[in-house]
Image 1 (spheres, rainbow, N blue to C red):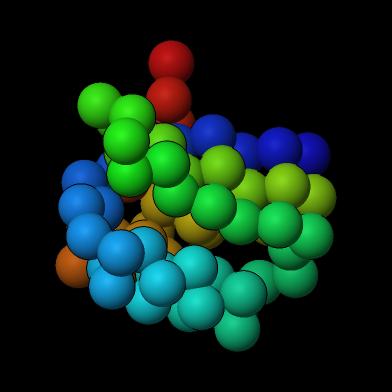
Image 2: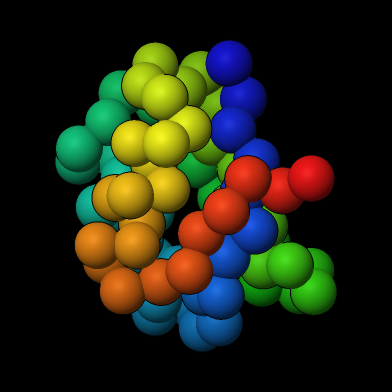
Length: 69
């Protein structure tokens, strides 16, 4: 499954921190944040947990996160 989320991750440091945390806590093939997109899209490939778990986890890291409609 591929998860695509809208976030408020704004800097390269924040991006690196969130991606590292996701990779350490969840089994994923690839994870990226597009800082140039207006929605700061977080894309997770081969997601093996629910989207709700990812949203809650990213929010625990201090960022907004929602399923991109």
